[in-house]
Length: 113
Length: 110
Image (cartoon, helix red, strand yellow):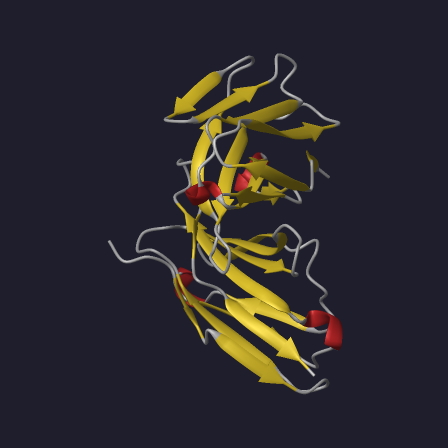
């Protein structure tokens, strides 16, 4: 079974630029999460989808971050414009609705300079 | 919202020794999950506990859920260099919202 795929693996941008991350969850997983993990901290939930609907986006900085999950499969997370404090690893995870475990992708390491 | 706090933040362990890391919540949790993240890697699910006082073992790892379902512990016996990494507790709330603690970073001295 293929795992959660994310791209790109690394991205370096200047502040005020835009960036987008892509995630392809495990086939059949209705729940998709985007997390931000700053170095030395635990993953912070940014947004959670169930199929193509948003379940929770309470910690998403909506003035600069946006996410979508068209057709309930792939998802993109966008930052526009980026700030220095957005430097982090962005992790995508997926899970089955009635199973406990979340499966994580390798993450995208974003550096904003 | 639901928050889980982990202590200690760092744990330096001599190879062969035992250690315990703790996860605490101010509210009652419906479940507790544990994940391991190797350096440079991504979190990997280890286990979920759902019952009050539940204890589960995976080889040298023992996981416990408190009687009041407000705390959990992970105990590792005879630490090995392969145990290096960060251990996170997490909890799934209504709607499958999965919230993580800050993690315990484990370093093993050979």
